[in-house]
Structure formats: C-alpha cells, structure tokens
Length: 241
Length: 241
DNA sequence: ACGCGCGTACTGGCTAGACCACTAGTCCAC
DNA sequence: GTGGACTAGTGGTCTAGCCAGTACGCGCGT
Image 1 (cartoon, rainbow over the protein chains, first blue to last red):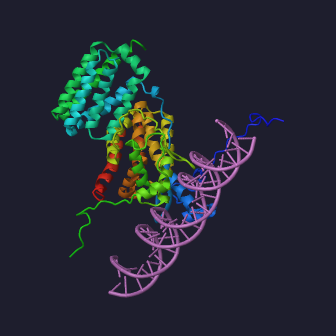
Image 2 (cartoon, each protein chain N blue to C red):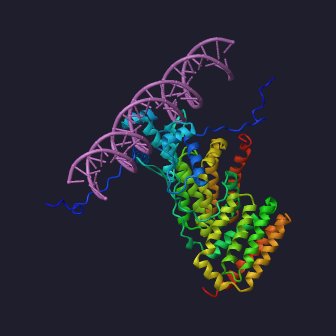
Image 3 (cartoon, protein in one colour):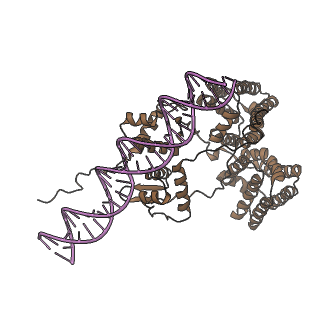
C-alpha cells in the first residue's frame, strides 16, 4: 500500500502569530468598538496582563507595536492613552481638478509666495532656481520632459525660498495636476508656440525681482506670468467647448 | 528679592527618549549606511544586547518597533532579517509644517475661498456647513473628536462650496496638519478655554455671510476668524519658547 | 554512498520577578 | 499659600529562566 497522496487532502499552512500581535489586534478591535474612547487610557500594563492571562512583557511588546502604529501614546507614570486616528477623507480624484481651477488657485497663492521668497531667499535658493531655469531651457517645446521639470522646479524652488513648508506643499500639490491628461490636452491645444519663450522670459523677470529682494515686484511679475498663462487658456477655451 | 522671572531664561523641554526607540533608530541608521544589507540578518538579540550594553528585553522591544515599521522580519530560530524598503517616489519631502506656517497659509487662501463660497454655494452646501457646525457643538472641548471633526468639516464644506476643487484639496491638505502631535500640543498649551466658544461664534458669522451671499463679508469674517486663532498662537507662543 | 535520527548549539518567544524613575494625590508644617 | 514628606500608582529597564523551533554535525544502518 502506497503512502497517502499529500495533495489529496490539502491542509492549511499554519503560521504562528506572535503574542504581541494578537494582543495589539485585540486592543485595536476594542478601541474601534468604542470600548476605549479617544483620549482615554487603557488599563495599566499589570492589569491588562492579568486580564489577558499573559505576561507583562508581552503586554509591553503589544504597547510598543500600538505606539509605533500611532494608535496610542505611552505616558510614563500616567498610562497608555488612545490617540485619535487621522480621518481619511475621500480625496477628490485628480481629474476632478480642472486646469482652470488649478491655475486659479495658483494665481491666488503664488504671487504671495513669490513676495515671501524675495524676502526670505538664500543664495542657495537662487542657484536652485537658476538650475531649474537652465533645465527648462534645455527643452525645445513645453512637451519636453526637461522643459516641464524645469518649469515645475522653478516654481517649487520659489515656494521653498518662501520659508513656509505649507506653501511648498500647496504648490507641489497644484503642480501635480500639470501632469494629468486633461491639463496636457489643454496645453497642447491652447498654448501657442511662443508661449514657451514668453514663460521663460517671465520666469527671468520673477527671478530677478526675487534676487533683488523686491517683494512687490516679485508678486507683480508672478501675477503677470500666471495671468498670461490663464489668458492663453481662457482665450483659447472657446475653441474646444 | 522676588523669584526669578520664569520667562527670562527659558530652558528647553527635555523629553526622555525611550530606549527601544534609541536602539531602533541606531539600527535604522546602520541599515541605511549599508552595515546590514537587505536580506542579511542582524546579530542575535543576546549579542546585540551585549554589544549595545542594554538588556535583551530592550533589544526585543526595538525589534518589535522595527518589525511594525516594516523594516525587518523576525524569524524565530533564525534571526532578524532586513527587509527591502519600498522605494518612495522621489517626491521632495518638505520640512515639517509647523502650526504657524499652516495657519499662515490658511490665512492666505481661506478668506478668498469663503468669498467664492458666498458666490457659488448651494442650499446643500449650507446644510452641510450647518451639520458640521452642529457636530462641532457636540464637543465640550477642542480636544473632543466631534469638535475637531465639525471644525474641520465646516472649513472643508466652505472650500467645496467655492466650486474649485483645487481649493478643496489645498484646505484639506492644510487641515491634515491639525492632527499632528505638534499642532495639538500648540492648541492645548496656547488655546484658552473660551477660544472654543469664540471659534463657534465666528463660524456662525462666516456662515451667515455665505448664506447671505455676501462675498466681502464672508472674506472679512473668515479673515477675522483666522487672525483670532493666529493671534492666540502668537500671543501665547512666547510662553513656551 | 546515502539517508535518517540524535545530540548539540544556536535562534527567538514568553514568563516571572525585581528595582527604579516618574506621576498624582494627600497631609502636615511653616 | 507653599513646600516637603509620604503613599500608591504608573511605565521603564533589567535579570534570570525555560521552552519551541532551526540548523548543523556526527554516527549508524541500509
């Protein structure tokens, strides 16, 4: 009689689950059920160990896991406190932001950012802007990768020079929409060839104002630049409906 | 002789750093330096404890932290193996956005957004704002989850009512920083108890302006609201250095 | 020569207990 | 009202021990 075929009755693979994970999972579920509201404290380690029938060390390991996962904060002498979880909101799909909307938002913030950059910029910031401009100049058309990277980089470097990381994040976010198919279609349909040269000339003026620490002029030149891009959009928009 | 002025020589707040974090950080750095390549094994717990001059328990706690952080996998009887790290897109990571920076950026954009909301809002937008305000009113203190959700929701609904998805994304992004430990610490240290009632009163005024389709007043009341919060931050900031 | 079982040394997993530093509250003296 | 002492509780770190699993070497049987 041959031995039974091992593939005939497939048994599941058993993976041992670390005790700390079991404890952390259990506590996570209880927290989600509202047993331990945000801001409240878990029972003390010794009490938890007793209730769960495990050692205090295992409870502590679970606490480490929960803390690293950002679910609790361990306060010595006080207890382990439940942290609020960052609520994930449904982010609008990038395609929801139209090119006009993105440009409008940029028009709202980038002049102010340019003004702050004129005040707060360092030599290193100026050099970074120049590198971005040089990169942009390497591209023959706005479709070229180097043109786009340089264009984006120039604006981002200005946001960095402003000294406010929140501005940088906002600019970055708005520029993310530059690479959406809709935006690219807008550009290829609406942008005249001379727009590329105009953009670079306008960048040079913005750069000069920032280099000269002229906040008012930096804001004005940035406003003019974005208005010019917007105008190209709006003027050409009636052609595509 | 009166006691020395506590604000005269401000000493830094000393935060004890857990041993497990120190060990985990050290190992993380060594991994990054290439001392432990991907796929290789760290020294055994007992050996590490000896080399680092700490107890094996502390090493184990650090291993838990590294495992939860996805940097290693702990293989019983075998050792602790370095995991490959998922390559982040080379997005430039801005420096931490401080509470003042986030508020400053909000001050730049939210009055304009409120003005646009006054123009473009619908009845549904108004109802959503009202729901957010009611949710906020359910919280007793700014630490309460419902208060924070309502607060955030109110501002987000205004951004939605503006009709520009780019504004919504920007507001959302800035409000994400509301839930960072630093921002919460700012709030708990600097915000007076009456600020919560003031905030809700100011929200009511903003809402009224938007409901009345009064763009100028919507912008003005929003500006006043954010200025008041900023003032509370700036006024109290000198107290913590 | 090859395969299997056993023993050994090593690994991590978990328990138990001890002691320490810090926190918070209470009480008392000044 | 303030400061100090005391108490009871919290988490933080350490030591020691034992167990289960892994890997390897060696000896023995086929």
